[in-house]
Length: 225
Image (cartoon, rainbow, N blue to C red; front, top):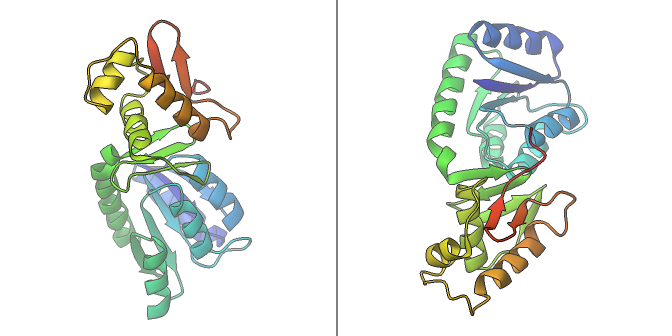
């Protein structure tokens, strides 16, 4: 299990890292909200342990920004024990809330439960580079920007994301997205690809949707080694 701990009390953070490492976890630490936000958004974790009171950017604001792009399970671990704080944390998108002081055994059990839940949801949340596709909410986000897609554009993106790294022919795309046999005299697929590319690639530095001449199209992050 890969865990991110965002905690400004260094003794608490190191205590948690040591305990989780002994349980076989891989642990990253951030001691303020800005660093925590960067790690949470740009890296993949199974679970995030998030303090509510952080310098730079508090835990609630960090959680709100994270939820715009990712559904990584988050447990807030904080001294803020008021009912209104718990309600706010859950409304902002926390999956669990634990008040300090806490038992490490209880925390670890909660992390394991969140990890299991997150893995059960994995198939509906697809990631290609900085692009995130939520098949349930029918929402696509790239680098914190919501992409406004039509129903057919989202269906096309979902197909490419499910089969990322695989070259899909025009025939395959036409059959699976439009439920039609591909006609070489129609340019419906090319037009749809062009419109989708304008939304998911044109505003960003790195293209994800590639044309493979004579074969078809593929969605993949080619910067990944």
